[in-house]
Image (cartoon, rainbow, N blue to C red; front, side, top):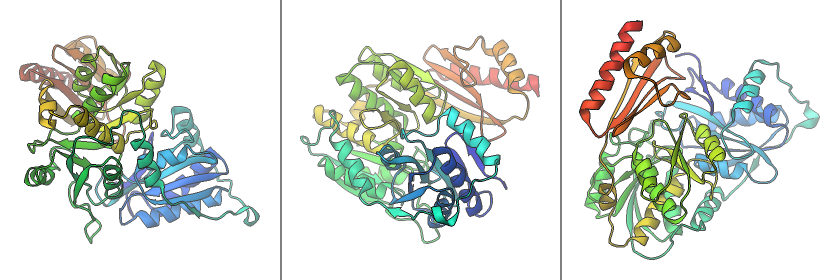
Length: 447
């Protein structure tokens, strides 16, 4: 891998190899031209390469007449919140999210606090190949620093109407994987009067995360042990940039990231019924949560900005992705672990006899299958064969998606790798096995 990966939200790669300070500078300069001269907020996570990339971003922005405003180490949703302030024309989060420590990236945020939308992405693509419009020395600005971003973020979430700051005493364990949640998590718990303990507070001396960065069932075993050992009500596991949250229940079960969104929907829709939006690869748990309150769930293509745009079209106040990302417009249009934590706590306070394990057990049990296979052919041809084998899909906005009794099947080409992803969920193993066998059969037919 010798070139950075460019996607809808920005650019990423392995620092010093596929993603260099020159890449960061050039990309930031193009983004500066896109949003125009003005203040651009810049926050970063705890990666060892963070200061170098941050400096390169500042150089690129300054070179095209923007004023970088450094927020320091903050979560991505914190950057999104600062980007929507008056006098700010955009934001850049220097983070590679759940990728290992050798990676870094830029997440680009528009003045609406949302990752770049399709029109802006198309314009940025043109700018990346165009000659830069560098300013002269007479027009140079200076980098600014802005303190208190995490405090403002936490204060906003704590004041949201559905957040319960008082009541039942609760204890949580925070697995912050040495990253930005080490600041956001404790501050959020303090703001809503929850007792907390933290594990993995720092990066390793070599610059690696102390556990697998992505918060899922495979990476949170220590958190599960600590929840039981410390008698906590729940364990919260974060990714490095703090936009996603995974859960461990009071029994130490790694119930994972899909329950995070389902729980948030259950809490919010119980108070304010209405439509919600999840992506095509999100668990049926979210539909079950909505059905409890007589509400409808709509599905969008995978990707945060796609969920947000579908929320806008459907008039939905809440949505998200099954990777632990909760979006509620009462706060802002972005995945936010602080919102997710606050809603789990609030539901437990409103249901004082309920434990997290009781709450999880109130939902149906599903089996998930996620596989990827190498594929370099024409997906359109493959799609025709898939329809022969699996039938007419129910949705084609992002690959092919079929609804099944007890679940669904989603087959889509990767936007960053030469692979096709098979993602399915069902209450019956036999149905999953049959669908995967038909997928393999279709693949053989086009190889």
